[in-house]
Image (cartoon, one colour):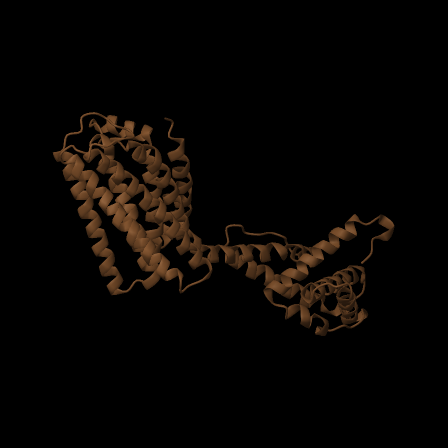
Length: 390
């Protein structure tokens, strides 16, 4: 038993926890941040400490056979409690009433852990069992009570939470609804784990042998349930991740035009990668605005109008047609500035009117123009030498 079925999800959840650690340090006072971090940590720890190799190591290190059992039960009890708490914060915020209920849930969890520890101390489990402790000691005084307390708490949480999630999912949509439905599925599997274990234990009480439910059926249900549950709580953050991705995409799209204008104006092309992405995007957009205004005398509105009409005739959508036409006008303006040997006044006066559509396109619009400009430069560079022209 190498424990890979346990360690792989433990590692994945551990990485997710580490990704949240900087935010946890910065926003320790935020209950939501603490709850998400606690959920990820407990989920990862549950897989890691439930792995048979880890059970063996912990039992040997402490010097008590099966001491891992109450430890794993305690970790999973805290995980279940974190699920309830995070769901309460999601739905109702951080009001006084919610905080009172959160304290009550954690108090119940603490009582459950205390009872688990007490029952283990009072009981006698001298033979180490890595996979079938629940059924092997199903009738042993006090160890039996420890198992019943844990399974009862697990099943209660696994029943209450999906009902709450299902009801809430019917009145919301988007990422939140997807997360809630994923939670429902996760807790169905998690409750199935508890019921399978309970059925095997009850079978032992009545003289039957359904141990396969505990050793073969329950562990995969727990693994799938924990992964789905954690994913369900993380899914609503997809909206924020989508915004981050859109910001990064916009910033990247602005790159070709920004770099070309910086070089044209004789300014350094450098980026402070440790600066927040939003600040970098704002700086890049501001630089493009300023450099385009300096390029205004060389812009020609007729060029942009002609290319936009040609693109529309070719079936290009209006947004992309405007972006391609603006990129073409800017490309001609850059060439005109580079080839102009006199002062600006010696060149044809164009004014800033030709740039009004470009500067008024907004952040995303300027990013589209820059992307079209980059494509235009690549196309020009790939053309045969005799045909390279804008």
